[in-house]
Image (spheres, rainbow, N blue to C red):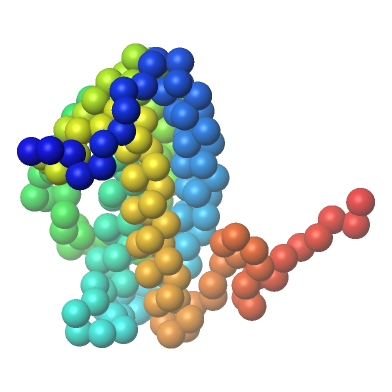
Length: 180
């Protein structure tokens, strides 16, 4: 199948530069994603704004598990999906999901940071839809997380939760300015 988006081949040096840039963004976004996951109230797991929407717990699981899945995929060098990864484990609370995310992310990101420039320049197939240099999927990972995190943030206030500071202050967590 022809790539939908065609990215030119990258040298390992070019891929290394992009990986450093994207991994810095992944690390920054992780902090924000963690705050959002920790804000999901345990007593509103079944909240959904529309019958076709995911529940809050399903969306929290998808957001957290997908970030971990991307990191794991980089570590093993291929994208593969297992059915059990798609469903929220029955005994998971929002706090459990947030803790799993924090713990797994911290471990896996350190391994991903150690991947060689040649890995990042090499192509990875994404379920037959894309075949891009591995480094390009870091941006895909970021876009995916930011998209679903935005959905989950839109659930928070209607669920009675506080909206954390994301890219600037919120009503619940205003910007703090240094006096210096």
